Amino acid sequence: MAVRLLIARGWTVLERGYRLGRREIDIVACRDRTLAFVEVKTRAGRGWGAPEEAVTARKRREIETVAQAYLARKRLRGIDARFDVVAIEIAGRHVVRCEHIEDAWRP
Image (cartoon, rainbow, N blue to C red; front, side, top):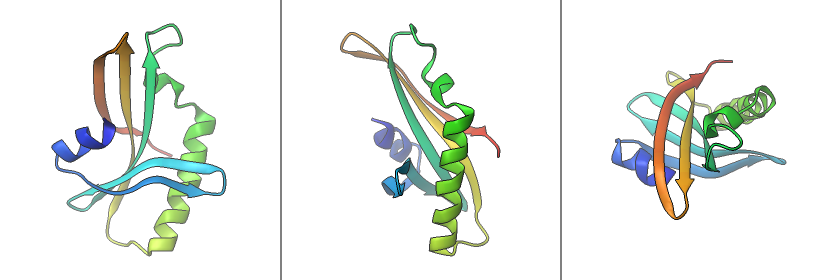
């Protein structure tokens, strides 16, 4: 669902489940000269808070570490990189929210 949302908004998905050891970035996507490292969070209801609230400081640091390795490995220059979140909320069998939060945090 997150991939479909990004593609519909003009993003090209470069990677899904990009790993560095045990750490992972859910989606790496680009549009124009912007590269987005996207964390996808899904929640059934608000009992544990909004999905985007689950991207803790620790999780952000892990994603940032993997992103740095990705940029170094791919030798990408002249591109703007940022960190996004796709928040998905489900109630029963229905998606009640699927939101792309651009530039969700900065290191």
